[in-house]
Amino acid sequence: MDIAKLPWAGVRLEAGGTAIVIDPITRILEEFGGAREPMYPLEHFGKADAVLITHLHEDHFDPDAIIAAYGAGIPVYVPAEVADDARAAGLMNVRGTAVGIPYVIGDDVKVTAVPSVDGLGDVQVAWIVEGAGRKVIHCGDTLWHGYWWGFARKYGPFDAAFLPVNGAVLELPGMTASGQPICLTPEQAVAAATVLGAGNLVPIHYGTMQHPPIYKETPNITARLAAAAEGKVKICMLKATETITI
Image (cartoon, rainbow, N blue to C red):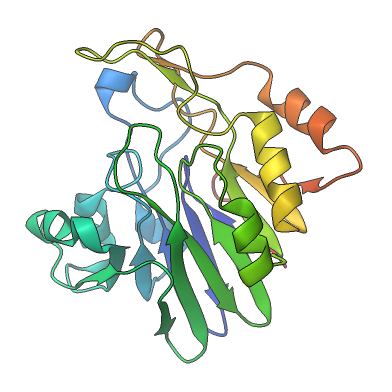
């Protein structure tokens, strides 16, 4: 399986000639300070046979970019509860997916949505992708939760886990500030990868947004990942456009 890192939380997976992109975006909204890393048109990364979306937050769901790169008819898999919203954005081939039901894409790639917990209480899933004898999991911008052990028992071990690591704290207008992270911290990401039995932890969801007090990323991410992971899991830091094969 070939893995390419897209900006922010996006990845492209290719196995057996079938290519899938997860949470691809081409912009960060100005209300969050804009992007602090280069952004690329999606066609820069090559073709895609399907798109998987963990949730419809604008830093994970970019329907205009999907349509521009792949056409409005590309299969786009989203949680069933938000399928109508995805269709309203102009996508013509939205597949509303139920948790735990596998779908086959191409000849031999299987994708399965599993439960996830969103930091703002919105609908979210994680995606398990299997192909070419490899299995990975992409967890969007999940919080720490109690599903990790069930994932490990039912689906694990995983060759790679794509996990958020920036422990962002939000202060949004109209919301009471909690001071609590809305996604995994570096230490929590390592703990989740360890429970999942992941061969590689590929950090996502960091380095692109920093706009205090609205959006405040946790500090010293790289060093904290390395310290937490020592002797437990391999950290594979990728910048956008970088690739690995597992």
